[in-house]
Figure 1 (cartoon, helix red, strand yellow):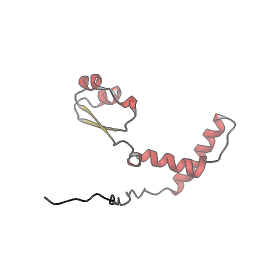
Figure 2 (tube, one colour):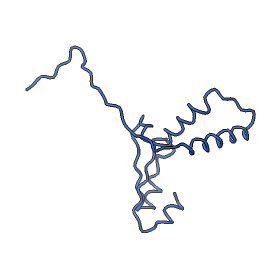
Figure 3 (cartoon, helix red, strand yellow):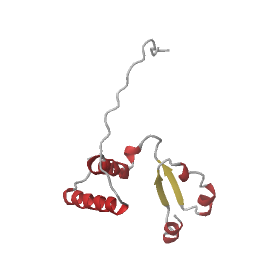
Amino acid sequence: MNSVAAAFPDRQLHVILDNLNTHKKNEHWLKAHPNVHFHFTPTSASWLNQVEVWFSILQGQSLSGASFTSLQQLQEHIDAYIKAYNDRAEPFVWTKKKVRQRRFKGRRITQL
């Protein structure tokens, strides 16, 4: 973040972060960089982070059940998957399923 803030000294920077604990407690750094603003995604909302969607695809389509004998073999496998994936990649259709509300038995809303 130091190099990003230095590269854009006269611009307001808005940085979106997940709720990982290492992203917290940055008040001192933010005071020294008043043009930088951190915004955190809601807890338990990994679907908002598109790289999490990509990691899920990689895991489900390539790594699940695989076994590797070396780090180099793993790297080559992932590189080959990425190349094949990119050859047929299309934009994500990013949707959120409809949220349904359900009634709790014995609880009613009464009008005043």
